Image 1 (tube, rainbow, N blue to C red):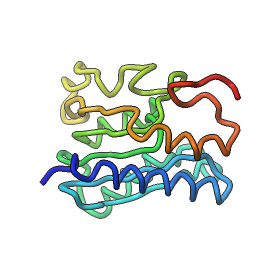
Image 2 (cartoon, helix red, strand yellow):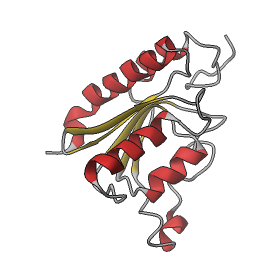
Image 3 (cartoon, helix red, strand yellow):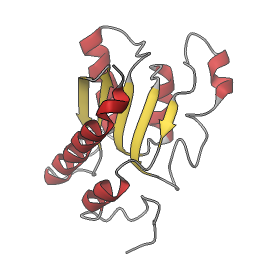
Length: 163
């Protein structure tokens, strides 16, 4: 079984995590790691506590703790917004096989603005970086944008005009 079957349910969960992050006063980002249809770990933003505590970073660290390895080959990272450059490098170092995100980040994206997720040259620095993951962007973008619209973060999404 592959995660494609579960993409919608896992992305819906990321959107719920993003809402939970907003509800507690942080930025609207939620992320999770799954493998073979099984939820491995979750993370919601905690950057107000510590600037590097992005939802993706927390989900990756939690997956590492749960699985006991830094090699997350075969796992998919789902996230409510396109990973930033910091998170994208961590995705590559954890060797995530697939990334699915909702909202594009044309100003800060590690996929659309900077080519970190697709950069095949990073793979030459073994054992540090894995192969470029398969990337699916814009998945349930509208639903994720509804959470984002509760915040002052206007610069995310395909339609990123200030509101």
